[in-house]
Image (cartoon, rainbow over all chains, first blue to last red; front, side, top):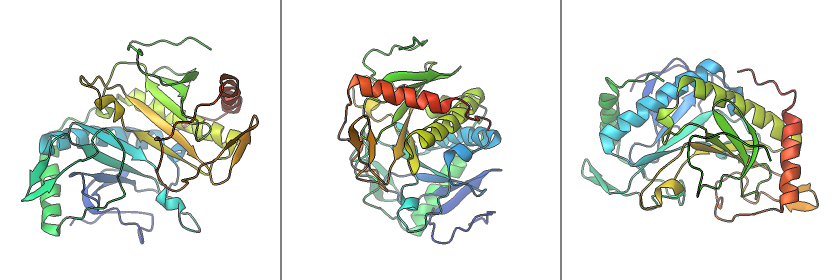
Length: 160
Length: 160
C-alpha cells in the first residue's frame, strides 16, 4: 500500500485502505464492504466541521466526487450513490475529537459477483440497516477492488 | 413566504418551507422537524447526481454550509451536524427522476424547548431511527423557526 501524508493523528480511526490521494483529501476503501466499493474520503488537514472547509478543499472534493462516481459506475455498475458527512461516531467518546470525512456508499439494485463473493444491497432505496452490519472482505479481495477502482479512474474527466 | 425560481418541476417533491435562496441553491425548512432546524438544500438547476455539480455550485454550497451551521449553532445550540446527499427515496418510484438535494440534520445532546414544544434527539451519536419517524410541527412554529434561522444568518461570515 502507498504511504500518505497527514497532519492529524489517525490512531484509533480506521478509515480503511488507501486508494489514492489528492492535495487536500485521502481516499480509502472503507472497512465495511457490505456494498462493494464503499469509500471514505478524509481531509488531510485537521478540521472537525464541514463549515471549516475552504474553497479550494470544496473544489478538490467536487473533482473527487466526479472521479469516484465515474470510476465506480464503470467498475461495479451501481444505480446511484449515498454521500454523507455524519461524524456521529466521533461524538460517542468522552472527549470528542471529530475529524472531517465523507462516506460514499454505492447502491445496487442487483446482486454483484466479484472474486467469487456475492455482494447484495438488500436495502436499496433506504438507509437501513447500514452501517449496522459490517462486512469485512479478505485482504486479497480488497486489493482487487482497489485495483479495479484505480484502473477505472484512469482517463476519467474530473473537470467540474 | 417568499417566491423562488426553479427550472425543475417540484410537483410531488415536498422539500418544506423556503428559508432563503442563493444563486444556485434553495434552502428549505424540512417537513420533518424531529430535530429542530433540519433543512433541505435543493439545487435550482435540473441535475440528478452529485458528480454533475459544477465548481461554482460547490463553492456556493460551501458558503451555505458555513452560513447554516453558524446560524443554527446560535439559534438552537446543536452539538454537531449530519450532512447527506442520499436521494434514496427518488429511486423508490418506477421511473426515477432524481434531483440533487442535501439534508442537514442538526444533532442535539440536550432537549430543546421552543415555542412551548420539546425537541429531543434520542439517538444522538447514531443515524437511527431518522428519518423513519416524521415529526411535523404547526405552521406558526415553523414560521418562528425560520424567523430565528434568518435572524441568526444576518451578519454571518460566509467566506470560505
